[in-house]
Each structure stands twice: as C-alpha cells, then as structure tokens.
Image (cartoon, rainbow, N blue to C red):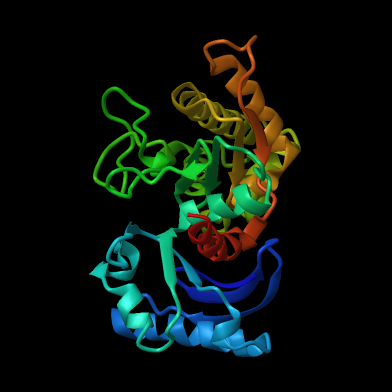
Length: 319
C-alpha cells in the first residue's frame, strides 16, 4: 500500500509518497509562509500532495489517503487544527484540502506522527508501550500504551515538554507557565545556557569555536566542545543530561514503557548523549535493579515527520 505523508512545518510543507514499510518513494517541498492565510496554506498542502502523487507516477486512486503532521492540536472528529505558530485556530484543514483532492485525510500533532513512524517502522517497531521524545526547538513527543497512540480525552496527550519540573518558579516558558521541562532539555535551552556561560567564561572552548559570537552558538558547538573535554561545556552538557534523565525517569514511573527513543536535533550527538542520559536515568528510576525501559536513539532522523504522517493512514486502516 502507498500513502501520502505531509510534514507541515513553519518554513516548509514537505509531502511524499511512502509505502507500508516506511520507504519514501518520492517527495516534494513548498514554502509554508507562516504568515499567509490558512486557506492558502491548506490549498498548497493539497497541491503538494497532488504533485507528489504525479511525481511517483501514480493517481489518487493508487494511494490510501493523506496523513498530516501538524505543529499543534487536532480536533480528530471534525478534521480541524489549531497551530499557534501558523496563526491557526480550529481551522477546517480536512474540508479545505478535500476541495482540491478527494482522499481520506488523517491528522495528528507532529510529535505524535513522528512517534508513530518510529513505532511502526523505526527504532520502536514491535513495542506495545513506548515513548518518543523530540529534542529540538522545544521538546515534544508521542506516547504509545498497549499498542495504541495515547491522545487523551482532549487530544493533547504527549505535550511532555510542558511537564513542570519545579515545585515553585523556574524559567518562564512560552506557554505562560514556569519551569517546563523543555526550558531545560530542548536545543534552545542548551543554547541559552551556553550563551550565559560565555559571558562568565569568555575563554571557554564554546567562545573560541564561535569567535565569541553568541549568534553562532548551537547545540552541536556545545556538544562538540564537551566531547573535547572543555570544562564549561562539560558542565553544561552534564546538567542537560541530568535534566533529561530525570524527566525520562518520571515518564518511566508513570507509563512503564518498553522503550524510550530520543529524536530531534540534539539526538545527533549519538552515543555521547545516550550514554550520559542512560546513566542519569539509572540514578533516577525508583528500582534500578529491576527491569525498566531501555533508552535508545530514534532511527528515522529528519524523515520521521514525513514517514510518521503517512503511517497515520496505515494506523487508520487497522482500526
């Protein structure tokens, strides 16, 4: 079977044809233009789907449907989406797109979609209980419980980046709260802490690698400096791994998954990150001598969103 997957981002709309083994047969891109009216973006999403189908030498009759990963909250019953960064509020995505292409449309939060991809064809394949964590601009994720994606009573389950890690206070979050987990474990958080450290330690390796230009600091620079043994970078990295490990331990206590997979930009640090996080998780779980979730790296990389969006169609077909 073949599906259309659409990974909707603030910069680009990426559409592709994906088979049931998760192989991308072709893909196309169009700019999102996140300040454009909703109807224009929805039309471009539909046209991108049409373009991908034609590029693959197929017709709409050859695909089972369209799956879309949206950076926001989904009304699954009515096919509507709210995406703050796009200026959307309960927009009729399904109805608008079906004006252009008459195929079944399945939507989910982009974190859930990426998690579904990893669960069905990636690092968590075969697991019945799993947690997927994306470490990027923020922290998102997806939860699978007893073989089914956990979406919750109001379709907002999986917003793990907004678990509160403080009893009182903490860093202000864009959501309006304080002390959210993503303010300590996102790539954005690591960069912010590194920029503060550069002010206090102007001779640190992070400053040397960036020529003292804070705008050039990214997660890779910090992690590379830590790998090279720079004391300032190592302190930043170890604090980051501690915060990440503590949060993962909390998720393990609540959900008892078989596997926790780490994706997103920071996960490109590979075993350097994985080893540090595993060590912290072991320190933080309640019964470290008993079996508990293994922590792994996600395997689909930047394609998780597109593949996972397509897998929404496969998931719907199984229901």
